Length: 273
Image (tube, rainbow, N blue to C red; front, side):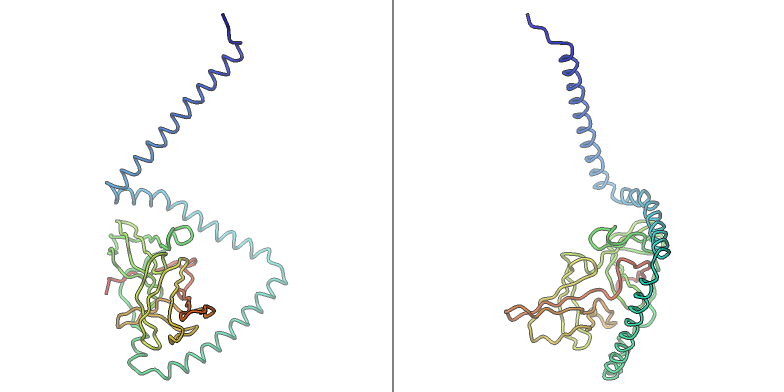
C-alpha cells in the first residue's frame, strides 16, 4: 500500500482550498455584475442617482488636486520658462488683434439682418456647473450638478456663453443631468456655413472635434463658422484645418467647438427651441 508524504498532503489541501476560494470569488463577482445590471435595467433613476452621489466626492477631490498641482507647477517654473510664456502670450495677443481687424472688416460686409441674427440676445435657462467632463466623462459628455429640481429636462439645449451651441441634455435626474456634445463619436449634426449659408453635415470625432468630407470646390476656409439650422444661427464649430492632399474630388475639413471642452466649468441649459 502506498502512502503520500505529509508534505504532499498539505500541498494538496492548500491547492484545494485555493481552488475553492477562487471559485467563490468568481461566483461573487458574477453575482455583483448581475445585480448591478438588473439595478441599472429596472431601477435606472435610482441607479444613476446612486452612482452620481458616490462619484461626486471623488470629482471634487480631483478638481481640488488639479488646482493644487497647477499652483505647485507655477511655483517651480523657471525664469526662462516664464519669459518664453510671456513672449508666446504677446505673440498670441498680436495675432488676436490682427484677427479682430479682419473679422471687423468681414462683418462690415454682412447685411444688418445677418449681423443681428449672428449676435443673439441673452438666453433664458438654467446655469449649471460641470462636475465631470472629458476625459473623465466618456463619449464627450458633461455631468452637471443641476437636474429636474432646477427645471432641466431631457432634450434641453446646452450653451457655453450666449451663443455657442455644444449639445443636448440626454439624461436628467432629480439632482443632476448629462449633456452629450455634438462632437461625440458616431454622431452627425446638420449645420450651415455662416458666411455662405451652405448646408453641411458635421461628423463627431471626439474631444470637441468634427470632420466633414466635401467637394474640393466647396466654398469653405479656415476660420469659417458653422452654425445650427435655426434662425438664431448659434455657433456649433469653427474650421481649423483643410486637407486637400487627396487625389480624388473631395477634401477633408476639420472643425472644433470654439471653446476648450476639457476646461469648461459652466453651461446654460435652455428649453429646446
